[in-house]
Image 1 (cartoon, rainbow over the protein chains, first blue to last red):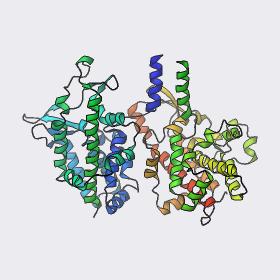
Image 2 (image 1 turned 90 degrees about the vertical axis):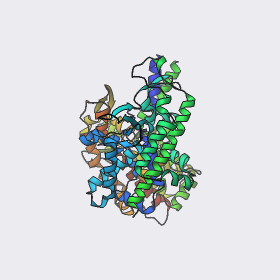
Image 3 (image 1 turned 60 degrees about the vertical axis):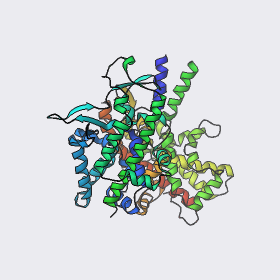
Image 4 (image 1 turned 30 degrees about the vertical axis):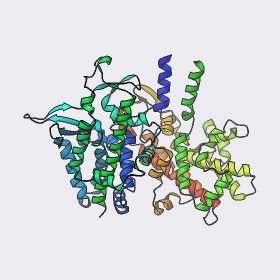
Length: 277
Length: 276
């Protein structure tokens, strides 16, 4: 009987066919929305012309929704890889972002359909790469890079009294659990109503590779996500798992919120540079 | 305990019993509100006691069990003999009960004519505005088109993770929300962005033209599901990718058309939308 009630309550809260991907729909939409708020009129007009008049927010989760439709999309890594010693982006995810940006810079030469897909990829993946759970650290001292840390393990989520996938906690779990009633416009209003220009200038200084380095550095060192929460293999006993309590959720929530804001501001800078001419 | 279960079940059934979900009705009304002229908005606000049309987006459903309003349960759909509109007395005379109840277009026309005719009490004026708001939304929900040659298709179903779901209910609840979890103002941000040329195209013709013009698309939705299909998370996602571009567009179209009707009725500088 109790299980039945819990199931009914879960259906009420979650709806029937909900899905969860990196940052979740709200997180991706928030980053794109914050970006949109910082676009120059010219850049906004130009990029929206390329995507049939839609907002970039409309396509913020397009890659998650459509990833199974094309072999190459399905193979894409939504997690960014870093050298654990330098915390610089490496490997295929770096190359993918580099080629995506190169295509965008030459967007006038792309056929309409290819341009649309490139924009969809960019607005999604750039958000993904600002998600702390999407940082994977590799030891590059050997012949081949060897995965050292990812967010793929279980934690005990005290606020829900349940074992929870730590990756999924960042994949929308934190922002949804901390603010279940907020939509992307609520997030945009909350995070982006009075951001000083000095802050915008500081987080958008440098290159996109510097920004990824910043994401990895903040994730790895400043917040000690991987070191502060010891890893456990999936299926470890509950008592062995790292505990994420209310205080930790608050800290993670602050970090996640700042990443949403920073991701949006940086996305705007790129779009303004490319489409603002 | 039993009472708690009943409340939960009732809460679950609220959405499934409604055409479009409450969120979609609100979205359509909010898009319309975003496209009202200042004069129309002001007149409507006066008529609705200071409220917006979004506040009353699903009002016709909310009062459907109240005394004096139970007949509105028949105002949620429209029927077609293949692609030919069933109207007037033919609705009541039809052998199928589901067609007898498909009086949505008749009710919409009556509400528009009542406001055009004037001489309404405050209550009558408010009610007719609220009828229009809900009915225009319903008449842009594909499953609220009853095609007499396609009645078996209305019983189509699918399995998601081995649980059975009705296709008609999917359209009413998840055709948009299975992909986008927008709030009302977010629907406006996403969908109230048509160019003047696009709006002119959407609102071209009469109310009846709009309803008949929807038919090819709305019949087409039954080609999108083979009844009895089984989906897991991945295949469900792939399937839904064929649906959300259609469903979101219908929400936008309904919003613009609702605005066109209301602007015509409440702004003297705007031409009325013709009935036929």
